[in-house]
Image (cartoon, rainbow, N blue to C red):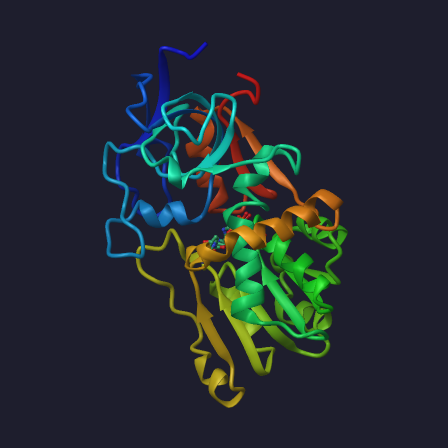
Length: 339
Ligand SMILES: NC(=O)c1ccc[n+]([C@@H]2O[C@H](COP(=O)([O-])OP(=O)(O)OC[C@H]3O[C@@H](n4cnc5c(N)ncnc54)[C@H](OP(=O)(O)O)[C@@H]3O)[C@@H](O)[C@H]2O)c1
């Protein structure tokens, strides 16, 4: 039976610097009825992602800011509980951007993706078989274009995107080197099959990176920016490629941090740096998702998720994500898989 009320999390204040839990507010609303051609979804998993920090800033960006009082944006996996759309039935598991809440009406069901629970746990539709997995796939294959034998370095290597990048690089016949914060994360990265992992918190980043990349670095999949990237840039080979995926270390800075200016290195070494946004590739998601799904199902591609219980814990978990408190793809279990 569908509940009568549900909880949602709205933006209460625009954070300055590091977000605080008081920047978010939980409120309760009556569960809405879906209109014609609409679908009511009970949300099971909410994805927490670094891009959400950008949505809290009211500045020109590739996506609009969340307004004060609005429900926080977010990817979700849920169960259809009422449908006025011929393409969906109660019980269908769907993935879509329905926000930080327990129930949502999908006003544009065409934007929902039906999930086949026989392939992998349904939470993976927010992770390895969802947006972060597609980011790794297209960022590596299309943007960075590794060749067999290349040394591929990825930062935030134990995270949602990074853990996939290294495994895909290995499949390509590359040397995969991760950079992550702490021994436990590095041990996990090596268990995934990476050739090496450098703990940037150990205090010897330049030397440890050199030891892990004896032939220099051909591809850098950039996830964190800042000092980690400065260290990588110094060891790039001629014709190296950088896939500029994100700079999470800078996301709470109100004024961009200015590090050593190393771009001159790119000139002589003919380095190519390209930024990208995953949805540029959305027309190609379906076949990529099918390939990745087969690898996940067969166990060729492994993944780790970090699942926090309870919608009310989403703000705290999100704040932790921006400091590396998560270990694997961060999600919130908003409700049980079987309603
Ligand atoms: N371009 C796109 O379309 C696109 C799409 C998805 C994601 N992204 C980007 O990809 C990157 C990774 O995202 P994800 O979803 O896979 O997140 P994630 O790696 O699962 O989680 C973030 C990780 O970043 C590291 N980190 C956090 N704060 C840091 C800091 N101050 N300094 C250094 N490292 C820090 C932490 O790992 P450690 O403990 O190892 O430091 C943390 O676990 C982000 O920059 C994100 O914005 C881009």
